[in-house]
Amino acid sequence: MSRKYFGTDGIRGRANGLITPELALKVGQAAGLVFQRGDHRHRVVIGKDTRLSGYMIEYAMVAGFTSVGMDVLLVGPMPTPAIAMLTKSMRADLGVMISASHNLFEDNGIKLFGPQGFKLSDDVEKQIEQLLDESLDRRLAQSASLGRARRIDGVHDRYIEFAKRTLPRDLSLDGLRVVVDCANGAAYKVVPEALWELGADVVPIGVEPDGFNINKECGSTSPEALSRKVREMRADIGIALDGDADRVILVDERGHIVDGDQLLAVIAQSWKEEGRLAKPGIVTTVMSNLGLERFLQGHGISMVRTPVGDRYVLEQMLSGGYNLGGEPSGHIIMSDYSTTGDGFVAALQVLAVVQKLRRPVSEICRRFDPLPQILKNVRYRSGKPLDDAEVKSAITDGEKRLNGHGRLLIRPSGTEPVIRVMGEGDDRILVEEVVDNIVSALGHAAAA
Image 1 (cartoon, one colour):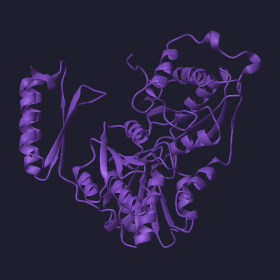
Image 2: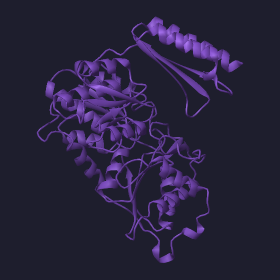
Image 3: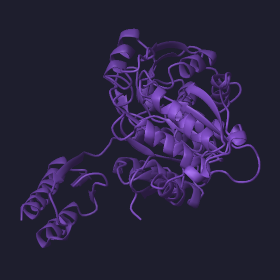
Image 4: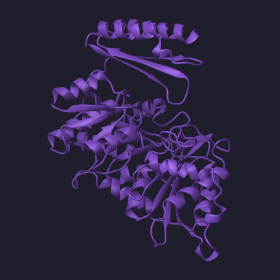
């Protein structure tokens, strides 16, 4: 069965376009029915980011859940990893995060977490999808069994304490000036407060959400404002989260960007030295730089690659027994602490290394020189250009020319009629030639 509503990270689309009140209500009813197991009073935790449309979707989902007999706990703007954590710690049957992550305010989305705080499996999402297209009138709760909804306080403090406990008890951030960009999103209250409680001199930006400015020229997808502020304030480090705080990008004291691959290198090496890696390896996606792979190999750490998407990284971590994984985008998963990516906790792990080594962030977070990486997209109308003989020949020729000193990744997009061609290697000119040859062949095949 093809998936009509769920993508790689929940349901996402234009607010009041795809994500309507009617859909949100139906998702509440369908998910509520799927997660009613046993005779206890069932309950769901709902959090959101700071988008204007969050109010509309939140109240529609409350109506959906209560109409099938589920109690609702509303926590307001909170990071996605906080909702995953609260779902488990509050013994809820289901968790909901209303967010479109790093997208601009016009979009919104619905992410669902099971009782253990993990994102839903494909099978469970298919069960919910089936119910979305059915009439549920006969499955609604009787009048006396309707659910209740209430807002709860104190959850900010719970997340702050949780995040602080991921650090050694005696570690303080005293003496560090930290600029933190919360993308005018879900972390705008909790993260600056947590950093201050840990002893840092905190300079917060992106902490004035107005419903429209989430991720707008700020946050992990636009870290230029953070770079400027770090240089202006002569700060030691900058932290840029995205709208729901499950991703992080850092900036060193010179204003240079540190991506997820470098963060993985720092954390992996530190954990290996401290005996904290569950096994001598980490999980990344096919997009992680070959420079990271070589660096890790040099330190006796293997690297397992998965398709693009944090759900695939987590699946491999769970099945393979790894406790660290992530993506170049800064989506870092540390399964000792969290069931999903947590941008703030990942940043804290790097800050712990900074305090331990007492060296500039520009030295600590430059563990390897990334290999030149070229990525180009080829759009096509129909057919299967990758099956074309000329394309296959160009790919084979490219692999021979790289001869072990680089790699090729050619994959169709999962969301649009586009084929992505990525090449990386020690020789940038050679990589560009190889990629251009494949792109040219794909262009001919697409036009045929």
